[in-house]
Amino acid sequence: MLDNERGKILLESGTNEIEIMQFTIDNNLYGINVAKVREIMMSAPVKPMPHAHPAVEGIFKPRDVVLTVVDLPYYLNGKRSQPDPRHLFIVTNFNKMYIAFRVHTVVGISRISWTDIQKPDKTISGGEEGVATGIAQCENQLVTVLDFEKIVAEIAPETTIQMNEIDQKGHRDRRDSPVLIAEDSILLSRMIQQALHKAGYVNLRVFSNGKELWDYVKPLAGEPETLLQKVALIITDIEMPSMDGHRLTKLVKSDPVLKQIPLIIFSSLVTEEMRAKGKQLGADEQLSKPEIGHLVDIMDALLDRQMADKK
Image (tube, rainbow, N blue to C red):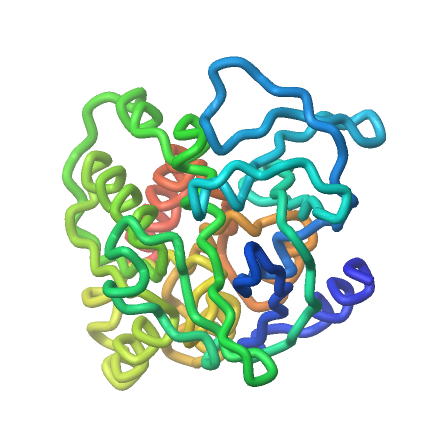
């Protein structure tokens, strides 16, 4: 079923829709973007691994592929899961990694607009350290959409943005080009800003979703002569409440004035399938997190080309 549903969603471009897979843990309803899910499997015996994060159960090997298993109930509630044949593994693929998450049940899939997903306030999300990326309204139910990128970054910090990729570039000159960033994860937004500042990019403006960035940049279409002095480059995530990165890309690249702004999609969801969709929408470049060093190289190239075109 997942492959069929994924095929349908990939045929459409910039619709600002998402499919949420709903699952339960201790009778609480949670959600994950279907685009992150490869398959649902019956739970199986897991081999423990020494010195692993407490939320990592261990590994198992279905069909000759070794997968890390995360005990999601333990991560969320601090209660160790007892093996239960009724439990399921949600096998995910993002950031170029395959990881299985233990859940209690899978409820189904709902297709909704990103506008139906609200950013949780700090009282319920836990502030900057919260793990809820949004609250979705699905068939009269409120579903807590989890920030799986943050979960993995906490469990395995070596798999997320690495500052040493910037250190390896040595001394870099300061660049004042105005760069707009749309990223809803507070943790990743902070890490991206720190890395880009270290790489010399000091004129950054960050928005928590595509709609906020679009509301800022849309009026600039009436100032074509000075446009690139106010926004020289856009970097956008794909998954964001209110407006996703694909919808933002479509809006920017469909505008006769704004389309000249270079736009980079920087997302954990950049697979070959998603790359085809981003290209169709007009993205100039697409990179998978956490390739921060590569992102800086692409930013340099696009802005250097922009400067050359002005001459």
